[in-house]
Length: 484
Picture 1 (cartoon, one colour):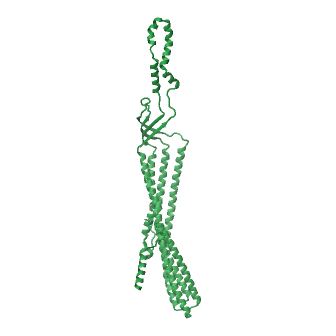
Picture 2: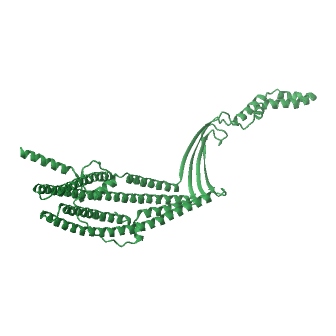
Picture 3: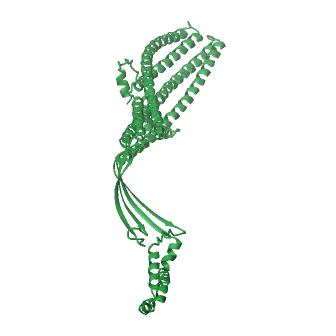
């Protein structure tokens, strides 16, 4: 039975250990990059910039458009007025009446002429002429009550004042800017992950240290209680140790709570469930070595910093924007061609059928006077470019300050690490002497507690110094643009 219980306990412990994920710094960085929403947004911005670049290039090519329309008119457009229509429709009647008016007196005065003209006057010419006049009126009808029209047009830009070329260069810079901004976002997320990672490692070590300190005080408390029973120590000594033990247990609880919260932050950055149980590969941290501050050239730093590249590209974009605005002050030339079709059409009178024609032409637009609108827009674009140049200059000054501060922090962190290691050696030696003195009855419990407290503080400072060295190196890499 005992063997069975022992085996179950071992299996349970093994399952709990195997169930925990072990995360390295590189795996945390990779998971954070894959799951970070800002990185995904940056990827979409790169795609959008690429499509804008292709769209801008299409402006070099001819554009073809098709247009169709239908128009219903309540009244028909008439090329003849009502009087003209009436005269044409009664053309024969009017001519016959005028002929009778002219020939009547002549026939009356010449009976012989009447015999000759009587057959002619008896012919009815009014009807045929009226029909001819009516056909003329119908021929002038537009019949535009229902109008159908369509057009296929082709436009080939020849010279647009440099606008198309400037747009293409702007979209090219915009794509590079999107890539540069993504690099900035990548370095920011890597730096945040490193901070959270080493914060967890620091708290893991401090948790181990707090547990060790609690165990140390617990052992001391038991020894003091035994000494009180033997009359070697006083109750005051026992109360002092008990209070210190209680304080150490409270500190351990705080460290455990802080460790849980820090693990949640790291899990959230990595896109993992915040309640995931995991451990870090550097929880058994190898002592960090002191690092030397590298000699850096600011021109190389500027070349490595994606922020400088972004601002440089922004400056170029504003410079090309000036060219776009300036193009509105220059002539624009384009070649046009089209095929027009309509029903009714005017190509063969007013035909009630579809017909069309081709045409080719050149369009020239020359701006003359617009009350200085384009000039003011150009000055505004120049001011925007000046702002971008000043921002670039200011960023270079700030980066130079960041690099020097980071180098200073690395130097100070190395000094602090060296001092904490020497203090640790002294604190360990002091604690060993205090324990021997307490066991031999030379020193009191207060002396031993002071030595233990000094040892705990020295250990905590040493952990902070080692983590600080690592973080300062990361910060220096980020400041110099060398963070990969």
